[in-house]
Length: 145
Image (tube, rainbow, N blue to C red; front, side, top):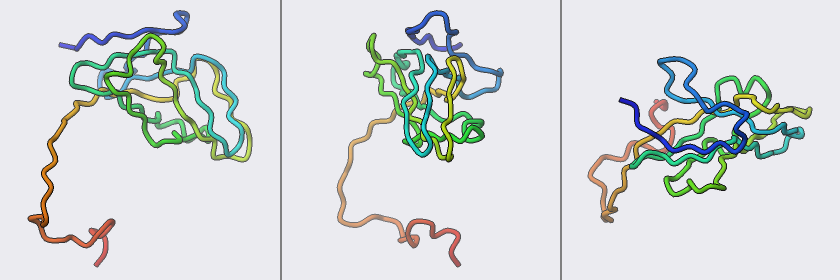
């Protein structure tokens, strides 16, 4: 059974986010307004929703696979929406970087990022003087011979 998630649309003339296929892990989020992103710059595109993630989850924002075809990437890699970022004015935005030499236009209604609800695990850190595993060789070491 699907969890119920509270969502507020800023502009009700745009549709609610939706999963595009029955096997989709993420649901698409669309631009609320037209945004011109200058060459080699970052712009913030409003996504038309405030969302309260289910208890024990956060909202991960990730680029749709087609975003790079437009010359855009998420400036921060991914976005993380905490459970307490869910007030009436907490509209999600996508920070998009234009990596081309020309302006790129995101039109109102363009699906640009996807959202996924991910479970949260909080931990208690236990500081130690020694780790109990052998040192593997550092970052990127598994491909080194």
